[in-house]
Amino acid sequence: MGMKWRHWAGPAAVLALLAATGCEDTPSAEPKPSGTPATSVSVSVARVCAKPPAGPVSAPKGAVTVDPAVPGDLAAKTRGNPPNTTFWLRPGTHRLAPDRYAQVVPKDGDRYLGAPGAVLDGRKVNQYAFGGPARNVSLRFLTVQNFVAPHDEGVVNHDSADGWVVEHSTIQNNSGAGLMAGARQQVRGNCLRGNGQYGMNAYKSQGRLTSLVVEGNEITGNNTGDWERKRPGCGCTGGVKFWAVDGADVRGNWVHGNRGTGLWADTNNNDFLIEDNVLADNDGAALIYETSYNAVIRGNTIRGNNLVEGRRYAERGDTFPLATVYLSESGGEPRIHARTSRIEVYRNVLENNWSGITLWENADRFCNSPANTSSGDCTLLVKDTRRCVRPGIAKAPLFSDCRWKTRRVDIHDNRFVLDKTALDCTALCDRMAVLANYGTYPDWSPYQGEGVAEAITLKQDNRWHDNVYVGPWTFVVHDPSRVLDPGQWRSAPYRQDAGSTFRTQDGG
Image (cartoon, rainbow, N blue to C red; front, side, top):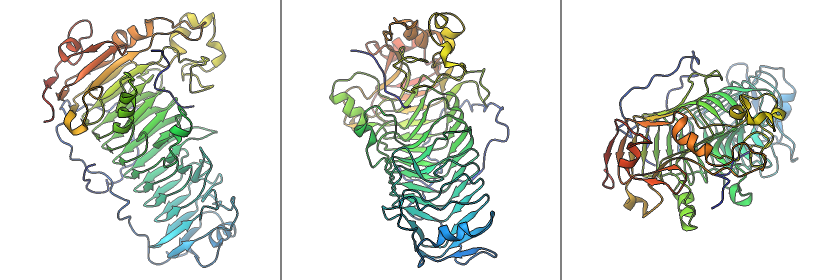
């Protein structure tokens, strides 16, 4: 899985913890835009890591008390008690047995509460903290640190069991992912900090990962292992990575200072609501939505992202419009059930990032193509991947359905602010883009030539309108060589940004 940008030649002060409101009750109801351009960057998000909330100072009635002075006490008492038991961890540093696989294996409905100062420490010995298939487990007010999960694996909910609730906890300084996710998981009010690969890896190897809530968390400093440098193009990092999640509410989080991407949805995700987050100072993109479907992205403050990756591309002379919000082979698809049939991007403020929004399609990436970095996966419209071959792929409906498309993207009522002096940038940091490469590969591809570039630019209902631009923005269309000024962008044949306003001086 994962992605490459393309295959072709050639923060701010934050205020308070957002109140938890849960999932949308009516996921089929399409959110309505406000019609009012975003003008403010003042939002209420999570500031958790500096002062995490404290747990109960004494054991709740009926709870089993866990003693930090007894190594392995937590795992042993979990084994020795029935499902639906509450465990209260006393203040202090709790340890597991000195074996790499000595994890806690909860039973259905078990509840774990940390007292003030309760820490579960893997001491760089244990791989996993909590694992197994138990459903509806909850973890609150506990610090989990120094576990050494392998690459692509996680420390808490290692086996992606369903129905877990993880709240008001600090998961930090672990290898791999601090947290995995299962269906109906709720992740609220946590500090996910300094983990080696991901803060959270929302991936489930078996079964569907549905109805995920990620709310009010601080997600910072993750990917300390710098995995994109170790494995170039792996697509295996991020503050949070989402894989094949059907239904997610991602709101009110402070996602900042991660090495690489802040939030990254990769491969057949659908029905996302990404709102009221602050995405700031991430080395790479603030948000990537890749080979996925149907999303609402609204009310986010996006500031100071992509400066490290953007400069790296510019310094090596790469003219690809590396984006802060990157929609790659992703679009609205009415045939797939969701709360919207588009990707709608509205009421966001993007301020002093390296470039803005790029809509991209790789003409060589489709089902069964060697250029498909989501190896073995096909679109959600084709159940039998083997159908996407010659001669059928060259004709309807497979010609359309065997490739992920960037289509039905509506970008409106946003505020885009760019001050090049604040970024210390002279070129390549000022771009909006809608483009594709010239199709060349493989030799049996029916998408060779400029057809995909023409479609994404002019024929797939991708629109910018009613936005506010402050600063010297440029616009890239069709391919990286076509760079337009605002007048050309708004004129035929592109006719973008109707109703938008432009103030071309820097800053403001």
